[in-house]
Image 1: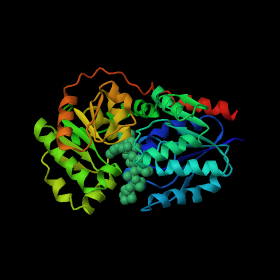
Image 2: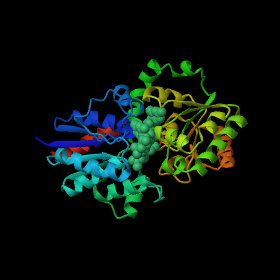
Image 3: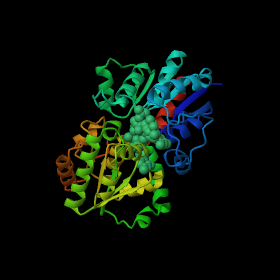
Image 4: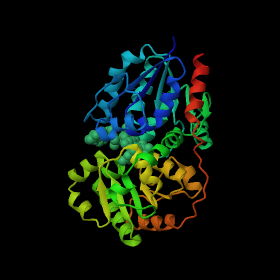
Length: 362
Ligand code: UD1
Ligand code: UDP
């Protein structure tokens, strides 16, 4: 029997791979699910298995509080006995878990599939850019979300095994939004109404690990809250919470009027909060895509994005962390017409990937 090993480890991998894992489970091959343990808090990990109806991993490892290098090294060492019997290893995205799975497959001479291949920010200071580029160059089967991603790969001479299939973020979202709207009480719980608030997420290493960008962004959030009169709802990523404390910025963030910090949210609550927001401000990859699908305008708190499709159609604007740029971009995006198309596919990405995997494995 053919054996597929899928490796996940972080919040976005669990969410975006849930529909792919479910489609692969339906193929009738042996399908082993591995969790590296990179994310481990209930609200960064287990809650998504429940919200997305995903089965438990067959192998669960621990990476709590490891450095990036030891996240990669430890995952390679611990997952090796599982992948040694694989016919195909599948990884997603651009995390340290992704890189570890890719290098492991290569060292064991196993076929490798990369989901969300070919996207590029062209900023090599981001750990994610290195992780996804290396993974693409090791992969045999590259599931690219858009033609832009395919063109990026072509420029790097990666042309074999590339398939444009959309992004499984749309599968996850379309499969769960109805349940989310039926079950989630988040708007009532937070006392919010449609179109009357901004949703903010902020966790990128380059933004939160240094006091300069973090403090500047807080000034920007204050300006947006004051200038628009909209409350900003901020589910705080654990990395950000830790850095706010380590950099002595907790009192400052608490003093920003109109900025409400909350715990990270489960997927169903997040979807409802996102769909009903007046604006999304974020440095997350997934939120740029989801906001675009919901036709909620987005301001990306970075200098570059590997989701250029969202910029081209006016769904998104780059603002970095400069306070006046954040305020100007927020005002502009709030006034933008919202009839843009969705560039990330029709929610059949996971089926297309499963069909291709089946064809390859025979
Ligand atoms: C990782 C990914 C990033 C992705 C993000 C999704 C890499 C290089 N980065 O960043 O691309 O956007 O996940 O959220 O892989 N922590 C907890 N609890 C958790 C998880 C993390 O407290 O459940 C804290 C720990 O202190 C940890 C820090 O957050 O050291 C950073 O976590 P890590 O997984 O290394 O990177 P992320 O910033 O989450
Ligand atoms: N998300 C969530 N709860 C939150 C914040 C984000 O469910 O409090 C979801 C969001 O809907 C998206 C994914 O997490 O699907 C994005 O993950 P994250 O921002 O951590 O990573 P990135 O996309 O930047 O790699």
